[in-house]
Image (tube, rainbow, N blue to C red):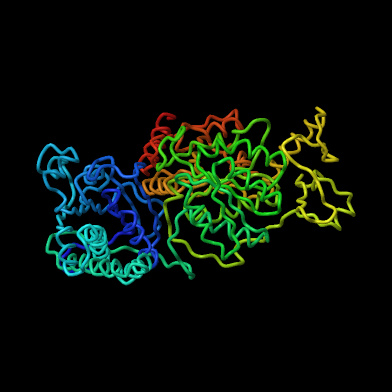
Length: 618
């Protein structure tokens, strides 16, 4: 790269942007991620923002962050960052410990005045010494340089200050040798309706890049390795957007129109917003007045023959529970998306947890079994949203898709799939002719799958009644007969159990010959797999299995786990999946690694936890 600098070549690097909620850290993080994905790097991001709408400027509670890892073999956003951009003292104080020893901290020194230090509760006038920072400090007069670059722009002072983040983006693009053309194109699209703002940001990003090029400080720059990617069209995509697109593909592959009935709730609202844009693809998205209306509108759409979806987070899943039970009783396809967040109650709306598993499995009255699946990465949200729709339709059942805030808001580089990469979805529709031949009734079932047939209203001769009251297994009439009720309960239960014949078998990833296996589910995949790989590099080989299908479990799951002397389950709760597996394997002792801090695991936490468990077993 630049001759006057110390160049480090790394397999991957981690950058963290942090500042006030209004400083545009999420925007510059997303642009940097998109640029990196566009040149072939693998990426993984972690947007970390406060729940407050706008905390006092410069306060510790108002710091917003965005962390991204780019390079090769990237599974996580990284435990610690190589470069930290801190827009003010509060951002520095809240994030300096995330920087690796010897890393780089870039600060807007113009924002480190006495009043700014007091807001961040510093006790001295030298925050770097006070924090005992072991990193390269690069003091950049970002505010002054941004004002100088835009002195003749005609923008007011407030608008000029909003461009400081783009100056930092230009500097970071220089530091990592990122092409400015891609970043400028992103800005042009972002501010297409505000040409003056685009022109200002274009000028400022070049100013930041040129400042880096002319800097004479002894600061490390980075050359990032990249893989030879599979040919195709790539984009950076977050989990919520991937979920929405997976639903659209499922609609195309099933021939069923897509309907979303939803109520806005953090961190799931982006799914509703994304689908609301897609009228051009025949999507019908309704913002309902509450969570109950959201699920009930979807049930009505399902009865009418639609691929019906409702989206929410943990509090909304609780409110939807009776509606989900209605779909269980009526045996209608329904996809319920739960983007999990910290709880209980309203809890920590912008933070991540895996604490809704038991609610998804059992949180309904009566015997109400449903299918439960969970994507493992932001891009896997596409596949598992598709899978949730496939299973819901082909097995005429509600399916709960458990994503979480970490992968819902986080993003990865994604190759847009070819049309033939995903199978056709086969709705169990019954025609008027078939119904006449078989003397069809609403709860007649396929003998192999126990799936009832889907009679779309308006089809001649298929008038029928379904609902929340128990029905006779033959006639479909309302029935309070105790023997019939028991048979219907068992039939619905067995129908879900047989879904195991229609999902992939559990795969052991990494070191299957080990006597210890690390187990995870959902969005913890990246941290767990990275931990296993790093332990193997140090001579301790651990097997790894990750669950995306939870109810029912893959057909070989229990048999596979029983082969291992030590089974360790790591999850972001107090042990819900471990308890679930323990219930199914009463003779096996499940070890646990748990974290309930509304933050994702670090790789180091997993490695420490595994080593401690194995040490205790010696």
